[in-house]
Image (cartoon, rainbow over all chains, first blue to last red; front, top):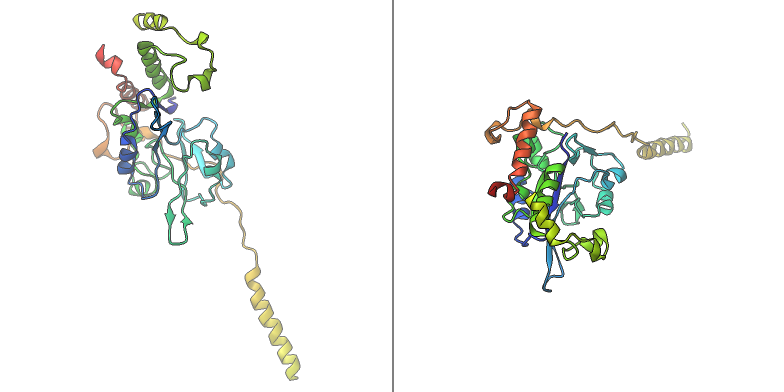
Length: 211
Length: 79
């Protein structure tokens, strides 16, 4: 069974915001709600990096754990979705999510918070596939059309990858083997520590790509 | 009827009516378990469905999704 995942390759993301625009257009997301956004670290400093962030469809999702009305569920494909008919808009998921994925439409003059909205991996929601009800509440159901999320499929530099976790990991592995890399890559130190001795050598990388 | 008793009875009735709003309504969560979502291989809007897989066939849907995912790898396309 597929386990759907996103990954953003920071070595490729050029902060074009194409993914954000495509998501808003495809799902007709209302003003003030961004299911996906691009974050730039060290902006203006040489070596700045951008990363496209949305719901990461966590395997052990904290939003699911804190929801008081259990409106979240995970599909067999590993997509974390929620039922807007059950959501009470309390905002707990927003505090729990490390990616800031849950969004709340502000409606009315007193800043009333609506029901939570987030990335659905273009998989719609609990309403019937492809129905008008599903589109209005959750957006397009591209997975049911045999397609991947629009943000990843139209990414011009293919920085944002989506699909079955195994395939996505294969693609990223292929890239790392081709371009080499290691400790100089952004985020390497956070993930594996500062020690450069453990970084793969370019020679080893090129050997890997030939095999 | 003694007017004082009448007033007392009226006040009691009014108090009962006013306190009626303080009653508790049942707040039990009616949703039990995760809502059921239709499997993606059961198809969506036919007009937008990608060719290359058969609606209702999970294996062909999986193949199509993997093919599209692999299409994101330009190293494969260049080979």
